[in-house]
Length: 120
Length: 111
Image (cartoon, rainbow over all chains, first blue to last red; front, side):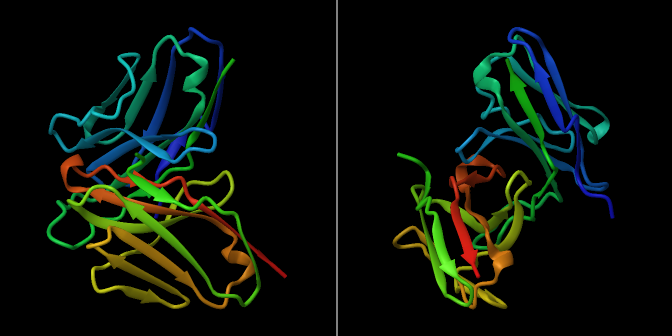
């Protein structure tokens, strides 16, 4: 079936502009995550949505970053007044919800191809 | 201190070699452990989950040592197609469902 899709695949913007990145999760996956990967760095968690629960925003680096998920499906990550340090690949992942219990793994997170953001 | 640490490599090995990657994590309350594979300019993909008793999937063997907070991945009979970055991933019990990634270990398998 269809995997996680993201758009645009590449985005070049000027410093100070706002950008919106979109994620379409796998159908039926109620959990959705945003991560970013800067050059030479590991993936960094940004935000997590699960169903109708309040999102976990603990990873957002500043108040310029926000995300929403409408109708429990598509999500949009918005970065306001972009800075050069925002340049990174922004990855979205989705999974079936499964709380971690004991030593069992959480359900697999499937990643989209990412949006490569370049802030000039 | 980085929460998930890996040797960045690169590891350059000939085809057919056995190679091992190590990973340490800082949060003793960690609950779930994985190895992901990431090809150049591609998204990460799950290679295998890591179970407490250790587990094997074909040429790949994963081990977990909770006492030492250490995870390993062993690749036997390396193939050219194994060339990629291998990411050690941990779910910390106090961070909900978010995954914590190491920076990855780069592997290059040469003919």
